[in-house]
Length: 134
Image (cartoon, one colour):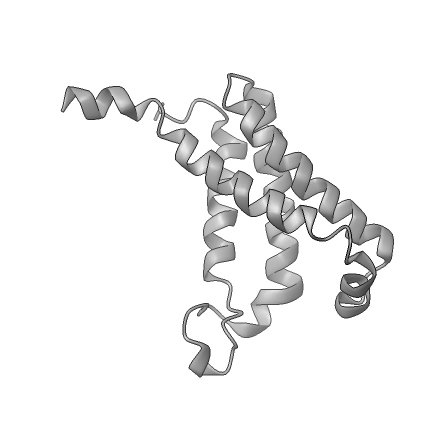
């Protein structure tokens, strides 16, 4: 049990690396297809660039935060929270909860995964690097 407890102090990296992967991927790919996204989402082009920049910056900050920079962790969590609230409102809310069952008519576009990312983001924004404290 002590071995597991000793590894526990590194467990935050599992979540950080997951968030990093999600946001670096979704942010980076927005740059070359910004105009198409702007047209599809009926948003100004500059907002797509802002969104992509927020996602990439947040991804970098969540990693930097893992090396002891509490403020970087909190800012990343805040950035991700804003992004996910926008994604849920603008894209996923209309499809309901279910993201798995594509046979339900929502084409797998529900918001369950986005809500989980939102919750984790809020956790990092509010707890920062003090994730082990209660």
